[in-house]
Length: 185
Figure 1 (tube, rainbow, N blue to C red):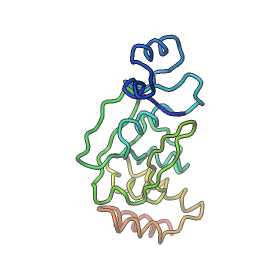
Figure 2: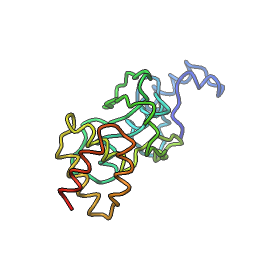
Figure 3: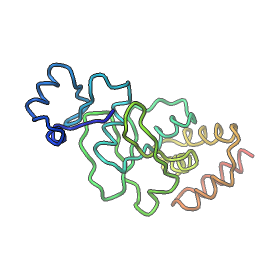
Figure 4: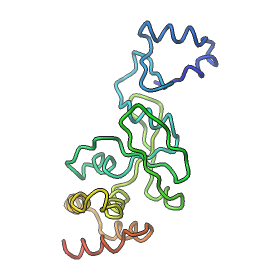
């Protein structure tokens, strides 16, 4: 199913007033300002849909990415989403924490994934990138989160060489990761 906005309905031959009437009758569900899904749409994560609809380059990062990769037991209070530095951070009704990442490193470890139940895609940082970011931003996220994610990743067979390679390409990541790897191994 496709998320639609009232502006797009005129392209499909449906007037805005007819669309709003259909929404008030329950044929469309409002998931955010100007974003609607058909009422019969499959269940999906509305925060992901809103983030992907507002900024096509949205990428799940930090604690949310670690949780997605099952590297932490911490449940994020908001969806952590990165956009390139300098991009406008949209206002959203959803629980989304927007982060600005440097344009030169934004694409490192970034893949796209299909949002279940929709035809939208959203970016997701790899486990290695997420761990490196957790160490880089340990002052904000906490050292324990980064260390616990690293331990779980190593327990599952993660290769330290892959993590070190990612860390060398990101600022302020290599030294704390090397220290943690030395301490753990």
